[in-house]
Image (cartoon, rainbow, N blue to C red; front, side, top):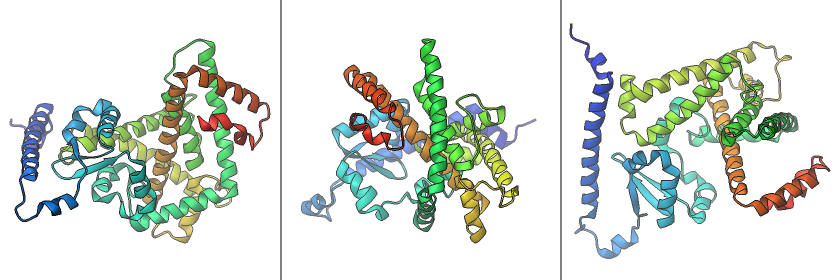
Length: 367
């Protein structure tokens, strides 16, 4: 009996053949576009062409695909040659910049002119939804306003401070145990777990305890959230991801499964929060405060919207802190003399621990 067409298309062999064929077509099309751009334009003078300057092309999306496991090294190499450069793909081009003046202009001076656009929204939507990292315009400003109101509240600052201090003590305990037994550790993995525990508790009001060993449900959520982030990023170098999503095969089928685990866990917490009475509802965490906002505007602040906002907070709070700390300690270990000075200062200041103690860490702040 013959196999249905959809079943045939979902086999690994068929997927590989289709992928190779489409990549070949895309590569030929891209080559033709590049050749066309090099042709002289009789309708424009050389002076007009000089006025319309573009950043130099450093490569194509296929260079990103080939260098995916060392993408940051590849980007650094490109930026050293040209601080601002372009990467072409069959459907659009991207501009990358490591020029501080350009970064300030994009993020501050003319911020409203540089939105995420439909391309990024379409790529990120399955994980980030209508969260602040994926949207522009009114939705972005609405979430920016909510974040400003939440973070400006004294009760929230006190709550988050307690959470971060508590998880910092757990982190110190784990590192001390490893140091005492002279064991190796993946420092970035530990920082990721610690920052995830902190931001999750601040966002949802629930202890995740991934650093000390979560229960099975919490562990599956953490793993699924990590995998979903990786698979979403893979879309940026996979020109066939939309086809794979339509056929529900390959990495897109895997992403769909991971997102279901994430959504089930988040909506379970959300349902528990909603079932609590207003007196029982914890007021300090972000989700509780958003539920209070929802009472005033239930039409626009839906449960899906709450899911999107809180997951974006997780991405913002976890990765930035963990990666920064990992890089800081890596660089510190390369310079023993600086490390020694930092240790001496920390030991001296911690004897005077109070809320203003960080202001005394003059050398550490400069490092």
